[in-house]
Figure 1 (cartoon, helix red, strand yellow):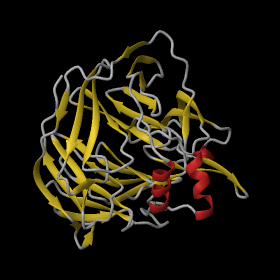
Figure 2 (tube, rainbow, N blue to C red):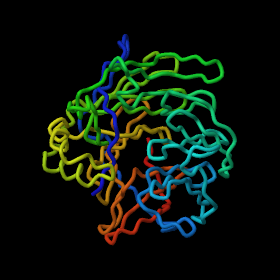
Figure 3 (tube, rainbow, N blue to C red):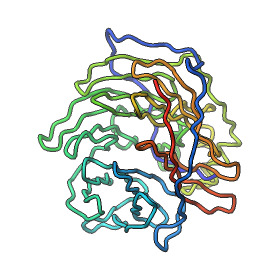
Figure 4 (spheres, rainbow, N blue to C red):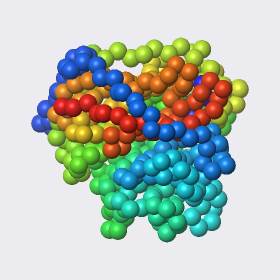
Length: 368
């Protein structure tokens, strides 16, 4: 199965935590297992005449409008709540409203605007995909608090010239920033050759900083350790929760090599073996942190796409309540993290013949 490889790797050296309580959970959910019941509403295989390839990101607005980043077509598609194609925007290019590097850009819905964070600019669009403006920006947004303020965390070593990174709160209007956390670069995935030092990372395999946000709280943690810190946007830690006894899933050099060789951004053959040896031999724990219906969802690392996706669910106080699973038919593969929005779930799934579809399901969420 193909894997997307990014230039980045982080390891923790987080800010000192004083007087913060920690909930240390056993590796057994208090309320047991929760299996999401999926009631399919619709599925589509194309946006207009463009068949889906392997969408990199799906986001959904409050009214159910769906925005899909498709790297093969190098643009963003819009579907309405019924799956009907409404148009496209943000094509690759360097002109007004065009995205320089779609494969590295990130898309956000912020109030009534779409913001695409490109390599050096923030591009603002209406919800219908009409270009509004661009703003110069050198920081990498991970969460927008509003259209002029965001949480930032670096993703590449070339963004950390001194080998250290910071989680920042950025205010575009006042042009100020405040430090929420600090960390240093990891050597995992780094190779040295005649070109110099280069770092490769595979999501789910190499340690990364994962950041989530909800209701004034920032949730963050290095995903090679099962430990989440919760702090306000003033930088003060509120509490911590963890599962100290969770075991990591091992990964062999053979599997790492197979994933490198099948990657869309396949490294040159002469350095693949160096990269394999530089990568950890265990998977990371989680890749995303979200809050739904007053519960914290940790989407577990999924380096080997399957027909199911696993989630650990916690109370806002950090108690481990449910081990949850989202599962589709055996002949399907979930190729991106499922998106939960207003009691619906959206997924990109791949059939055995390689056909990719976007599907919408009606679901019920677990309760406290």
